[in-house]
Length: 93
Image (cartoon, rainbow, N blue to C red; front, side):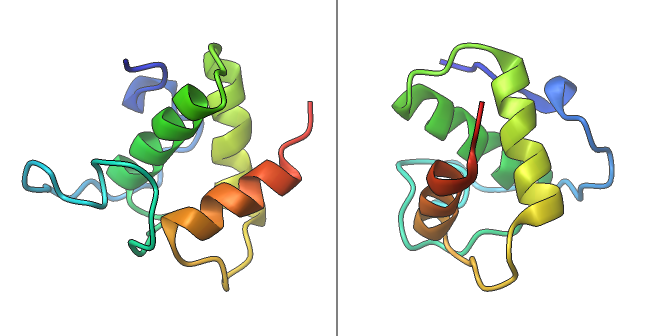
């Protein structure tokens, strides 16, 4: 289920690469795959996966996640799992 899409993004400075189907950067569950916060497809994918995992239903929650990733995520957070853990600790409502 898609809860958050490219049109919901707040920022417009992402690059948009083409990925093969089933690429772990944009498919499956968050794992130790490297995460590129400048890649729009990866940002949208991870926000969607986490919104589904945590049962968030509103795009403004995705925007909060996006802003944290874009503006505040430390450089040493490098994998999808690390992003998930960092967001869980830093996402406040």
